[in-house]
Image (cartoon, rainbow, N blue to C red):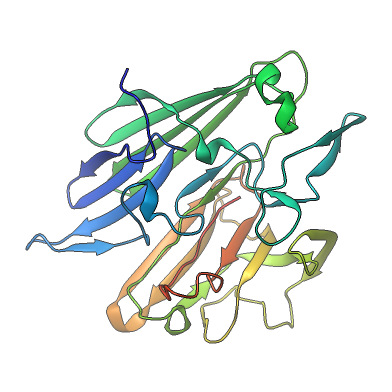
Length: 281
């Protein structure tokens, strides 16, 4: 088995689509459309090589997405302490599989499945004494890029688990302000000054954060976790980013397993003002 480093990358393709993924963190590093002349158009703001990464580009967030205040949590009567790795304050953020080598379980021209196992004895010192087997599959097809996340509890006790995904999408605008977004959330979580949820759920109705119909982003600075998602008859929720002048629209569709979507305009990544609309969590 080949050694996995932050520079290890795999390319998959289907018709006019190409994606680059890495077994390092099971990350999505590039997703592009290719026209008849061979010109590539970015669907996500991506990177190549481990040193090229900015922010949380393409990260898989397991066993928890978002922030845990001071890294402390309680599960089934046990008080546990996670590593505090958040640059915004003394919090734990986004799990830890994004900085671990995964195994390539299966690889085809248009599809790759990556696997990792977390052992309770190994991760107890990091505040997560639970055993999981995790698989992430990226597949290109006629409907676009499909990402499938599978988590299995392989331990002897119940385990707390959350799954998130952190790509930054682009519709080719020079600034995110010029794009429009549609978000199916009817409410969002209140965050405190350290960007940690307070537990309050606020309605978007009648507020500047109601984007259930397409609206220009403009000067809005998003770092919001939308919940109570409106869904279609199949139980799917869709977030859309578009730029009418370029006739470009990106739809991010989630099944019923995903109960929230975090919308982030990347304002903290000030030196690269590319448009971004990440993560499903």
